[in-house]
Structure formats: structure tokens, C-alpha cells
Image (cartoon, rainbow, N blue to C red; front, side, top):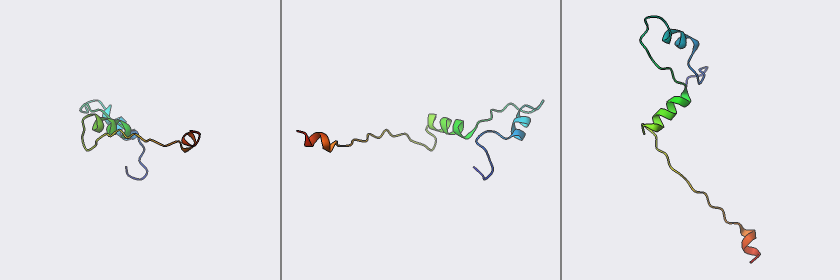
Length: 62
């Protein structure tokens, strides 16, 4: 995102998208875009990571 941009569509974009005679478009924010890219595996991959920590105190009491 460029500096000064927000994560939701700009007021001007919303105004243009709802203008009479304008072609129908869907405006999406950054989170929605990331969700769609993830959903369709476009430039992203998902991995599940398991993090295991040994409880040393538990072993000392044995």
C-alpha cells in the first residue's frame, strides 16, 4: 500500500463505483484481497506449523 492509503476503498473510488452509468465493480480492501488470493492459491501458500515445547520441570519430578 502506498503511504497515506488506508485499508478500505477511498471515498473517490466508492463514489465512482456507485456513479450512474459506471460499469459494475466490486471494491475490496486489503484483507479481502488477501483472503481471495489465499482462497484461489494465487501467489500464496498456507502451512500449518506445530510448535512443541519440552516442560523440563515435569521431567525433573520423575
